[in-house]
Image (cartoon, rainbow, N blue to C red; front, side):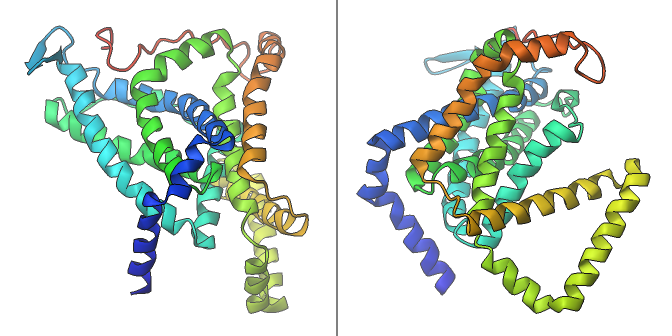
Length: 334
């Protein structure tokens, strides 16, 4: 009964004027601006995957439904939008309640930190390598729906990290879908001119993950260590060092485990420093930090391009992304 009551009380927050009016404050508008920027940057890979998934559908054949006439490919993406909004709304209602539990907040923040870590340090596999399959129209629509549900995890966690206001999170989820469908082309052109933006989105995600983790009170870990006792903690440390040392030798097989150990230590440090040093930030301060990070890309982009041209990358000079992905829904796809 407590769980149902908690869900009900959380649902009532969507009808609270205090929650809704936050959108129209200066802090609320700044948070929404950060949501648009972070969602737009993060939606590029997602938009690329969706473009590949519908690329086999014809663009030269159109279908008219009432006043609307679009190509078969566009109809597949449009049909996916409605399901995406439905499933994402359910996920938002659940997420705004479940994030109140420290364990889930820790896992959510850790997941966002992992995305950033994987992008910058772990040789992230490009989603563009994904191939299309299932040639039927409705089979493609179902795949688009499932992919939208998977993409909603990143979007909702990012919104939860920016603010705990339910209407901010709801708007963030909706903006995420629109960014994948409408704004992808804008950000592709932005990346063409400023290649550093390819990494800015994941830097913002890592910042959001840090905020979520740092807000988890260290007292929870103190209780865990007290439960394990000195012997249990000692054994845990020895096992961790042994596995990490083995991973140094067998890098190919144990690279993921080594990365998880390093990420766990980073999470523990963030939680400890956030509690001991009182590094918790309000929505306004954190939004300013996010916006500053975004704007700094314009300043350091020249340095990044020069570093690339002088062989800073391990694989040598890497040409800037020329924006081969057309805007989602355009008839040029395929």
